[in-house]
Image (cartoon, rainbow, N blue to C red; front, side, top):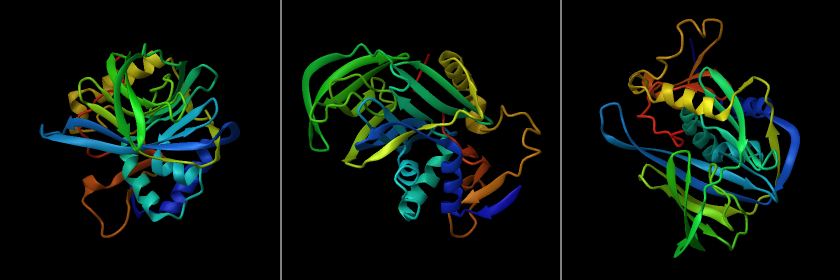
Length: 289
């Protein structure tokens, strides 16, 4: 394996060039930024939090959900911003998916990965069966109302604001009379909290499916949950990858700058945005089924 100090701008430009197509499916008018937190435990059983920032680009009929810093660089051309570079780097270990909500019409498109493979699937827009309540809350200065719904084995409590009449939210959460600014599951494992709304205009560009294996959504979720949910995963995150899989590739060991850190703090970069993490916490599935 080669060792290299990361050149953030060049590496991220490569990702952008390979992932996005020139096909614009909508025009974003608003970008909502969320803090996404997962409460879990580390390999020794200590309570910890995994966290990342998500951005939802909202158009008139479709939305795109992707890691925030990557969105700012790829979709808004902020490649030279050092904060975005470092934030995007720190989020790489989660191998977060890219979701298109409402595209194709009435569906969700998911570009996801379970190293060493990339997967693509579509599903009908989730029916959360939202039940609206009279409870209210102010989130990021917006008056919100509470709704409770269910999807994929979890109960979700969402706070939405009709002051922003968009039927989207973080991840796959959608279908309410206003944008969802806060959400958490009933078990207290996951939370999404709006950190701010930006009025930014840019085309919402669809991704190329080249290099992705198309699966049925249920098969993908079962596959991911089985591998990541294993007790072996937290001890050795690459336990399920056959030995020799990457013999023909030049895996690069990277870190974001400064002196060379311990091995566990580096990332093993397989190909563009795909990472083999060396250290993970216990996997908590957003979707149980």
